[in-house]
Length: 322
Image (cartoon, rainbow, N blue to C red):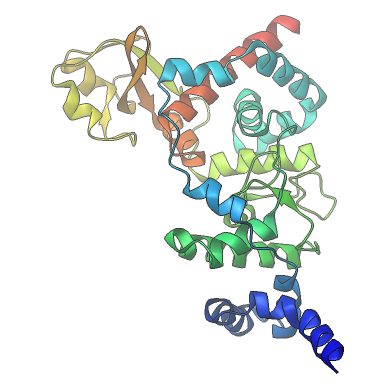
């Protein structure tokens, strides 16, 4: 009798482990608002594992802040640029179509994928279900955000007919060549090759179209510049820096305040002013609207500048190699 009782407890263990009021509320909401079956949803969530290592990585104090000089050494390498050219060459048709459809030049799409996953080589080794389950129900600090992302992930898995336990990604749940969170997947991922699936994990064409669509939907302006070096900062520079990275004034206003910017750029262009620190000193840049669009992908001035400068290197190499 004892053995029978022990076996019954072991079989019930997954349900006991996962059962908690927060998760039950989540299941009920998914049933009421999204039409999920409660029993099937419990079966899916029973496959998820609470991962303490994911909580540890999310909770770990940030490593020392890198300045621009240190940050760019990570991404602006010859290997990342040359392999970006290879990625461009094997995907020329998809990149041409993306520019035609969304107005985003190839080098920017390639650079995003290069910075995010080294062209698909580093897409994450964690099960997305584990990551989102762990952070939704066992990481109170950001539970609201990750509960929403778990909901979006289950919806996309249903729409794409994916087993939720199989997709892999980062420890925060970012997925595929372009590292989309589930909410971004639902909003911006596209079936760019017309095969009936939005596969951003293995299909480079879909990943390219999805990144270009993300840029376009966030306001990318075809034919306009991204950024320009400011050779001399304006008077009262802190006022302009404190305005943030979203363009709130014009190049003409910066020039009237004493800034020296490339003369070929129109006074009417809207811009922000950013300052980047290097070991050699400070750099000032006019961050135009398309620069701001890049920061919608990752809210970091260093990230956006790395994408921009990598894109320039890739474009130069691609043009040289024909």
